[in-house]
Amino acid sequence: MSEKQIVIFGAGYSGKAFARANRDAATILGTTRSEEKFEALRQAGIAPLLFDGALTGEIGEALQKTTHLVISVAPEEAGDPVLSAAREAIAGMPALEWIGYLSTVGVYGDHGGAWVDETAACRPVSKRSVMRVEAEQAWLKLGEEIGKPVAILRLSGIYGPGRNALVNLENGTARRLVKPDQVFNRIHCDDIAGALWQLIDGNTGGIFNVTDDEPAPPQDVVAYAASLMGVEPPPEIPFDTAQLSPMARSFYGENKRVANAAIKAAGYSLRFPDYHAAFDHMWASGDWRDGEARSPMKR
Image 1 (tube, rainbow, N blue to C red):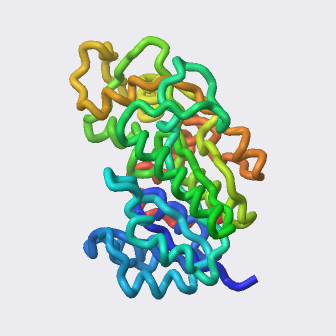
Image 2: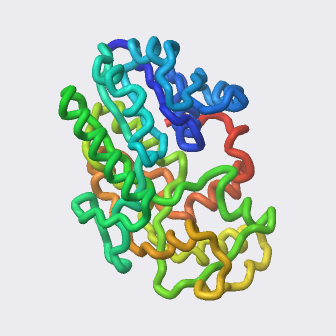
Image 3: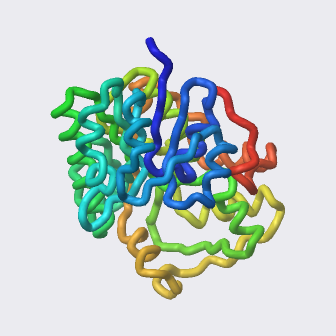
């Protein structure tokens, strides 16, 4: 098999974790909207490309040699910006083997705390989740048309170095909002990376919940982080009286427990099956503050 060349559209937090995890396994290129972010991409092992919604000659040239596409760009009112700009180019890629699309468990909407798997009905509540469902369908349709596997990775709340309750406690922004019976799933960025590499290595298509094993109340996560730091957790705040942005409040309008059997059946074993394991590791290793400065993780 020829060497893999991977293009990540939207090489942000998850994309950089993906590249750092196995940068020697492929040539990895990634897009960003700002040249100011080029150096951070290079440090993660990603050759930077500029994408502001228009297909440039540089990107078009890269796609000619690309074997795997990872899409991590949020949909817009007009549709998926990558498909809008590059659908024809993607459909004509001569070396393409596989497409991965990073979506969200928000597509399921509210299930009243019940367990959901990939067969559950999508009942998106927010406009952004409605657009995600439409984007998922568009990518799956393209895959069918060109005869290539498309993997949809539905991600739960993303955390990891630089983005976690330890950081929030240190900088004074941590809050313990309490809404009775509310739970969320989470996923460490290294497990997003690991799941992506697993699906790429197998050229595996389908829909996969990429999420941890332990849906838990958000206030419990903050309390656990505080216990590791040896500090008092912030006081509990009843959800009904909390000052929240409309987007933050909308997250609490969706309550479900997300099952992950499908990604495990595809061969992936979670590195951090729950937040306890992840926070224990981040605290002990000291890598919780900054995701950019970490040494690469090998599989």
